[in-house]
Amino acid sequence: MIIAAASLSPILSVVFGLLILIFPRFLNYFIAIWLILHGLLGMGVIR
Image 1 (cartoon, helix red, strand yellow):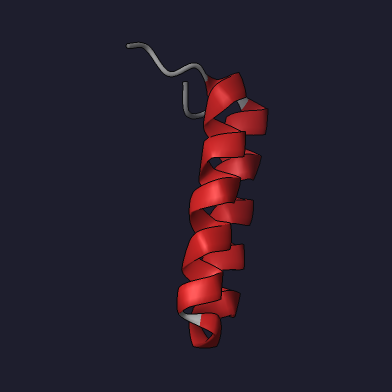
Image 2 (spheres, one colour):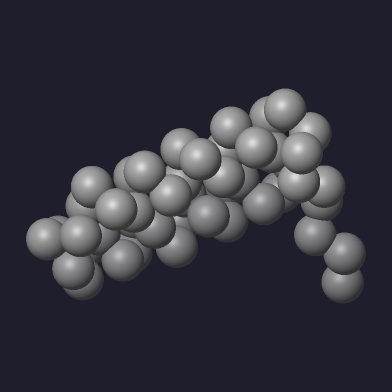
């Protein structure tokens, strides 16, 4: 199975959403990581 950049963002959103529910204390870290990855995907740095 090949995961395209377009399908990676929703998958990451679901994973980080679940992690935030389990570990709400780490909300800032999860959001920061998600924003960085989303930005890199949007710029095409990560394919």
